[in-house]
Length: 114
Length: 110
Image 1 (cartoon, each protein chain N blue to C red):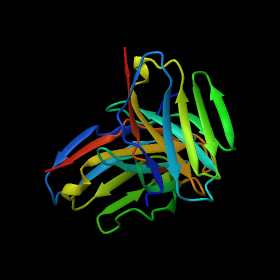
Image 2: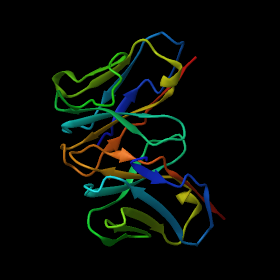
Image 3: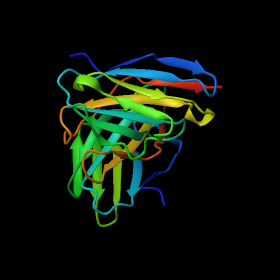
Image 4: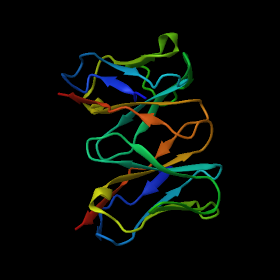
């Protein structure tokens, strides 16, 4: 079974530029999550989708971050404009259902904002 | 007060010893608790989940939960160098949102 796929794996941009990340969850997983993990910290949930609807985006900085999950499969996370403090690893995870125990994480995208 | 607190470490143990990792949480309504392992540069992977007070064993790993004290721990018996990683405690206060601690770095010395 293929795992959660993410691209790109690494991205370096300058502040005020925009960037987009892509995630393809495990086939059949209804729930998709985007986390931000700053160096030395645990992952922080940015947004949770159930199929193509948003369940929780309370910690998403909506003035600069946006996310979508069209057709309830792939998802993209966008930052526009980026700030220095956005430097982090962006992790995508998926689970079979919204109450499933196990969240499976992708390899992450390491973003560096200069 | 942070929702999930862990000692950042590093916790250093000799090979073959028991490693004890601790976590406290602030939300009393939390019902589900998880331990994730994260190797350097890799993504987290689930190693243990626990829902009831007491101990839960899985191979060399034992998770312990005390809801009255809002405390969860992970014991790793016969620690191996391959266990060297950051261990993340995660709590699910409701729905399926996970709240992670900052993690404890474990180093197992051979």
